[in-house]
Structures are given as C-alpha cells and as structure tokens.
Image: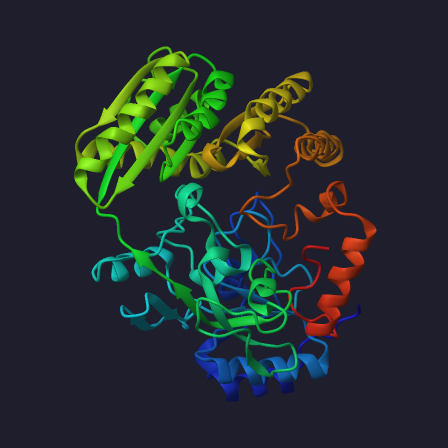
Length: 464
C-alpha cells in the first residue's frame, strides 16, 4: 500500500478539529510518540494529534481515509511488541485525553470507561465500592485500558480471573471511514450475530479505534495471603505448578522468577532480599471473601511445595513484605531493559508442559551463548523469556537471533502452545506467525482487515 504525506492544508483541517495545541508538528514534540517499551525501536511520525472525543476522531479518520494517510492509535506506550509504533510514519493518534471513567454501575457490576483511563486508577475506584477489576499487567500503574483491550493484556491474577478479553462486554469504535459503531451490547449474555467485540479485542488498533469500553466487574475479595517458595532449580519449580491445582487449590496468582531476574530487580530497585541458595522461585497468592478461608488454601499449597523439594517457604505476614515481594516480581521486565538491550518472548504452553518449555529453551540458548532472564505467569503456562544482547555483535543480533527465536516458538508449538500469551503480535512477532498459523488463517485475517479497513490506513504493517 502506498500512503500519502500530510499536506499543510490537511494539517489546517486537523487544527480546526482538535485545536492547535493538540496538533504536534515539531520533532522534539513528536519524538516520544515514536517509541514504546519494545527493545530500542523508534519510528518518528509525521504528525501527532491529541483528540478529546470520538467525534473528533471520526472527523480525523474521514480525512485520513480519503487521503490515504496511515493512523497509529496509541495509549501509554507501555507495549512490548511494537504495536503502537508508527512504522509507516503518518499520523499518531494519542488517546491520552479520553481518560474519563464515565460510569461505575454497582447494581450491574459494570464500568464504562474511555480508553485513556489508567488500569490501576479503575481498580482503585471500583474497589472503593467493593468491586473488582482483575486484569493487572505489570505496568498497571501506567498502562491504559485502551492499550489493554488492544492486546487483551493479562497479568498475575489472570490464572484465576482471566485476561482483559474476559471482561469486555461492549466497545464503541471508530471505523477507518469515520463511522462510529458499538460492537455489542452492555449485557452478560449475547448470542446476536458475530461477536465483533471479541474480534476487536486483541486486534491492536488494526480494525478500529476504541473510544469507549464497557467492562464487567466482580465482587472484591478483601483477604489475601502470599507465599514465596525457594527452589534449587527452575525445573522443580515449574513442575510443582500443576500439582498445586491438582490438589484442589485455585491460586489468584502463581508467578515464576529465576535467580537472575530476582537479583537484578533487587539490585536496581535497592531491595534488601536474601536469595539464599535458590536458583528459582514461585510467588503464590490466594484470596478469599473470608479470612478463615485463607489458611486452608495455604496449608494445601505448603504440603505440595514440601513434597516437591522446595528449599524453603516464606509466608508474607505483613503488608510491607507483601509489597516488597510483588515489587521484585513486577520490576523484572523493567530492570532487564536497564541491564541490556533485549528481546522479550511472550511464550505460552499448557502449564503441565512449562518444565519442558523452560528446559528446552534454556538449553537452546546455552548452545548459542545467550544470557536469559526468565519469569512469568507460571499458573497459566506463560513464560517471558528475555534474551540479553550484552556484547553480542549487531550481525548476530539481527541475522542469527531471529533463527533461534523461531526455534523457541517451534518448541511452544510442539507442546501445543503459541507465540504470544498477552503481549500481542504487533511489529516484532509477526515474522513468526507462520509457526502457528496456516495460509488459511492469513487469508481469513486479511479478509477481516479489508472488511473493517479497505484502504489499510489503521496501524499498518502490524500483526501480518
């Protein structure tokens, strides 16, 4: 697809729609919108617009569709797959000003929000009413709900409660031609035609621009207990995970961390923590509506850990210890980037095959002399594999490493898994989609894209 540049007349049209203060033309203003948290990639857009509502976005889309100008919509830029990078230049549409919680319906357990609302802000607001919005990515303090919808984001508590996809009831979206539609209805059951809502969730801004989100809420479980299990090796830690579920416990979070990740997190965050002789850790949380329901769950978990060679089990008995342990876990992805340029692979298999995935991947990386940091959501088989560049040559990094990554994804496929559990495909994972998809899959997806966006202006060069 050949796209056009943005003329002065079109810029004037955008100014009349958004106001001059919301049209960014200078390089220094545009530069932050050319990056996200994906590696060290950067693509400078021609123009950045900061609209205030769906009507303005509709008018912008009409102009861009008529003039073949690519649009990349953007939330907080916390993504890890390059999903919001404007690789074709054109226009970045920042949704930062669509940041209102429009309604919290505590009768029907729903929230209606704009896409620029920060995940943790919604969590805190609904909790005041005794309600719960579970999806909690590591970047929950900065990532937006629109971005979460774009990637069907997850987080530690998805093992019990599911990902963003499980909470989206309805969306208002602006199509490429400027038409505004709702994808469904604000109801818990809906068997009316194709499920457009779930088609848009996870589509990374390639089918429409989300301007309103209706989310399902749950009652808030006020009581939690947190355990940290130390293991001599990662295989033992990973192998223990399915056994906990088999013993009748449903943790609200079950996180795996390797020694390197924990050590780096403590180093960069100045956290005092004794790793002892452990090389791997499981961070396990349970929750309940009654405090007396916590200890029976913890006792069952402790028995499984003890039977499977846990070196030690720490029970976090105060809020400071709980906060410290979660801070260690949530910071690992961030500190990996401080250590080196890196590539993060968002691998996922059924949890019983997590030991196989870990062992075979680490053996493959060792053959090629690659340093890794591994952590992730062990309870749902989602392992984040961070490959550090360190002093590897650019030639190896760009030419040889993709071949190794493809082999990692082939390991995932061998065990019935796939190449992204929660980060999406975006720009950096799309070369590997053929590992898990047939040509028929691509044909169907291209036809869907064409139906929503005939001119291909919405977030081009993403997913496929």
